[in-house]
Image 1 (cartoon, rainbow, N blue to C red):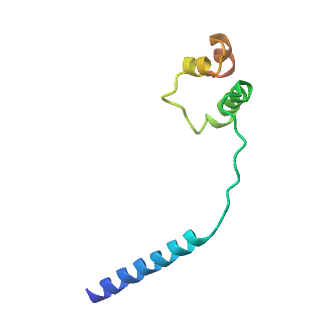
Image 2 (cartoon, helix red, strand yellow; image 1 turned 180 degrees about the vertical axis):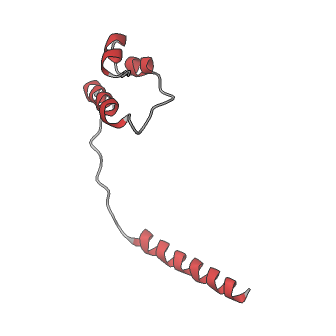
Image 3 (spheres, one colour; image 1 turned 45 degrees about the vertical axis):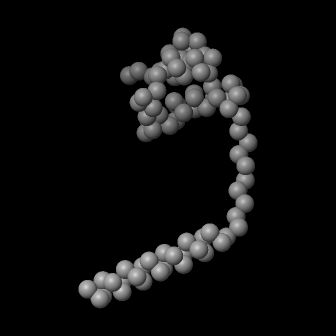
Length: 86
């Protein structure tokens, strides 16, 4: 019982020290240069996602017609460029 208590306290002390060290570091983060209103960029991103990422990362609960409406893409273009069958 004493060994378990000693081990637990040692682990907790180690975690407390490591969290303080991580919190003390002054790292400045770079800002991302993104614009969610840039329709052309969003359309290109959707096309790239469907071509390269959707094989492993699904968007199972996203509707294609909603993507088209949000990105100002016609239903014919959505079907032609984003919906792959086969």
